[in-house]
Image (cartoon, rainbow, N blue to C red; front, side, top):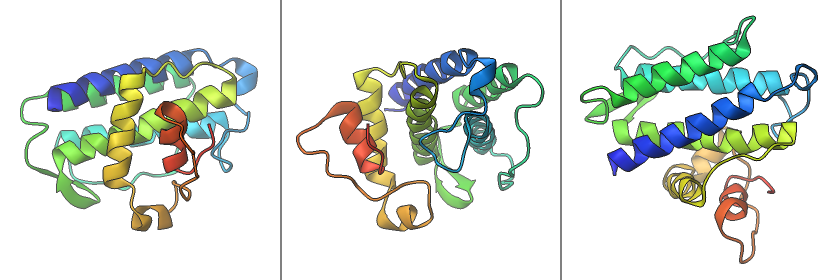
Length: 185
């Protein structure tokens, strides 16, 4: 399971980096499906949480994410650096064993699952905002959805970031995954 999860994270990171690299200068201030964020805000969030997950994988002390600038003057390079360092931490010896703190203690594998949920869902948000294809395979979407259904509870929804479940009817794949986290896709 853990090798599959690492492969999924790698695929999601590739899609995310492709999307971030394709943002045109006039799109950084555009709105996103995350109504409180512009494209730059969304990518800044993605970089910040990616760093946080990598720090957890490396068993560094938990430091709450800030609203500070994670992108600097070269957002594409900053985002790529965040995904590279996080992936390296997840691939390090013992990273998927035992417990991590994020801010609550959880199994390291579950933390990787949260990482997959966060960046995978935001790939769709970003693609929608810039009018691009998200680039996630059906298999990757299935893994994101699997983790959503394990982790995104009513309590998690109440803290924000995930809306109420939307009836997706007989839909499967991306539309079903998005409906579970409160997005229409």
